[in-house]
Length: 182
Image (cartoon, rainbow, N blue to C red):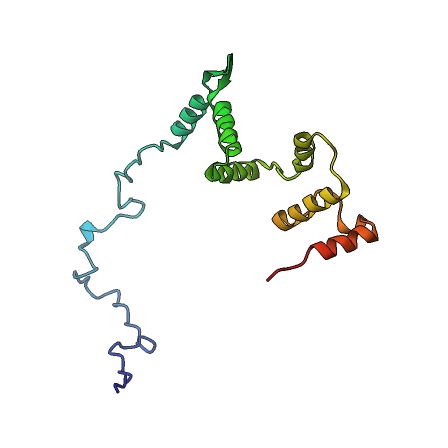
């Protein structure tokens, strides 16, 4: 078994070092390390770097921003079926992203939700209207409860009715149906 012993440090502590006395004003000036000859010392008010710092090359970020803005603003012609539409490249890109999302692309889903979050869009708020549009009929109370429960689990808030506004019979049904399976 090896034991590790603490070795004393070789460094000296600088806590109790006596300050050196400044040379007397009548003593001659001594040239040495840190003490250049008087003729080579900086004069009062004179810069140590008279040429100044080198100029940095200008940033290209504003140029890239302008180029991206110009490129996204260009018009393109899209042929969808037998119709031709003129859109900006930005609008065409958003439509393509939404189409990829609709086809089930998981990366498009991630990007679409990130973009919606950055733009402040609440995609869950329109879920009730979208379900009504898809099915062609209004949601029943049970369907609304299921949508609200799903949204509560996914986003932390429910957009439709809250549990406090449900009738006692519906609330007990929700409690029976929401068993935690661990």
